[in-house]
View 1 (tube, rainbow over the protein chains, first blue to last red):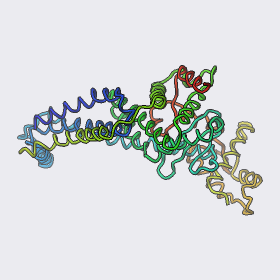
View 2 (view 1 turned 180 degrees about the vertical axis):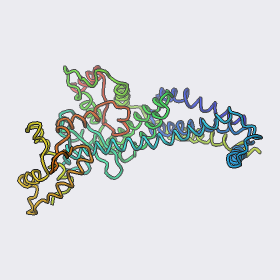
View 3 (view 1 turned 90 degrees about the horizontal axis):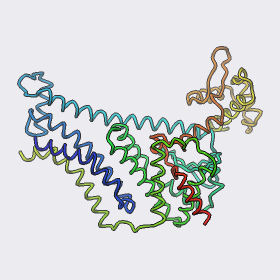
View 4 (view 1 turned 135 degrees about the horizontal axis):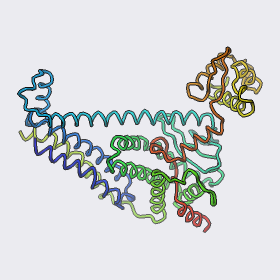
Length: 319
Length: 128
């Protein structure tokens, strides 16, 4: 089981740094955002699994030859309360505790992030109910009285809404408005909020891991591209580009300094980068990745998930 | 009969007007006063008289949401809006336009912030 723990540790390191850095720089992801999203999820899951798995298997080495035997040994140790002859020294105890702590930490952070985001959404919804009015002719759409052209969707299961500002309605033609609405509804229909929630939790749980930030940014950008693609099913490319241009350039009218943007916190910077990527993709369209290549990406994602799983159970299989 | 949501809006409108127009001491009003004003502004237009208990229900819902503050020092209790309508709009828009780390998970905006240079390019694109 010794070698398995080292292989898992190696995998954890690879998935925590070089692989995500490479993927975040890759150009093909814009041509297959769906497949790229699959890959990001596999990297995050396999990364977490191998991190925890490496510590768990290494810590269990003195207790058994494989995961099952080791866990059985651990259970016997805890319940029989007879640590003297186990050979479990403090270093191995430390590894086991770390594995347990990391697992609990990840699960709890996911839960807390979910609760915090739900609370923020509820508060936002309360304010919207007071400050907006339902849009004419379109269901689940609210109009807020504000001059800045903004459009967004607030997910919330059954009660998801798309919100438009009066400024937006003034600036956009009906066709452009349609493109914006289709884009927002694609976010809701494809449940992008769940993905963004998971990756926001991952970033909160492991903020010191550079990849958790890279991953969140990439996932957010890829979901925008998917929504753009959905909008392009019904809208012309020029219409969508125009809508993006109007909304993006209308937000800060020429000559007025934007106090919120003056300090440009990290979020705004990555926002700008993501917008640039989306626009580049729309202005110089590239063919989608071939179906074969997309299947290949999905296969890689599957492999990524199976490697740590196999490493965890293989020592038991090998005897 | 107006729905609870509509009543909440009507009550908040009245409380907002109250803190905008009244002096600091008068910014809080009782449920009875609110009921009378709601009746006057036509919120019981279907002929049914609006009950004070309904107004109290609405007020306690709004209090739970952190939008209304109850002043308990004298009876009957008086209610006031925590802040003005404009402040709430600012809070809402700040959440939409701001760059809080969790914003993307809370709500998905159509387009993010662009740099000044990009905005310039976009304006040219629109003009051309």
